[in-house]
Amino acid sequence: MSVEHIVELVTRHNLAEIEIEQGGTRIRVIREHAPVAGAPSPRLEAPSPSPQATPADAGASHLVPLEAPMVGTFYRAPSPEAAPFVAEGDVVKEGQVLCIIEAMKLMNEIEAKVAGRIAKVLVENAQPVEYGQPLFLVEPR
Image 1: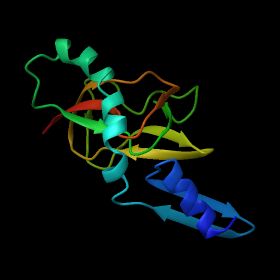
Image 2 (image 1 turned 135 degrees about the vertical axis):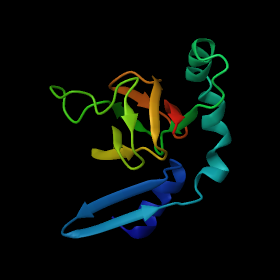
Image 3 (image 1 turned 90 degrees about the vertical axis):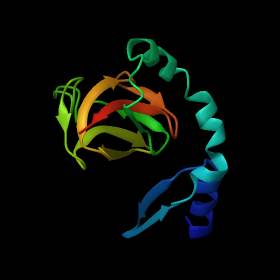
């Protein structure tokens, strides 16, 4: 698979990141500003989880949404038998693993961007997520 083909895949599917290993060669493509062109579409679809959280969290405008950095399948735990990485009410540190998103058979650990308390888990385990979709609401500390 050529680099041009990989870049075409990243562009066509509006991926923020992809890593491919083939025959001892590993290629990783990261699009730092990829969301600019494609962000409006996923954000138009993303509000469906947010309104569900809004009535319960009315007046909680201080909560910070932690969003999916890629398209994939959301997992709350490292394996089906394991306990979830975090639950509602847990206090987390910046950089702490909150969940895994499986994308193209790769397991990507998603880390907290802010320290705080998990106020709400917005996605069910093993559900597909879109780029920019809110996964957690965090009360910053």
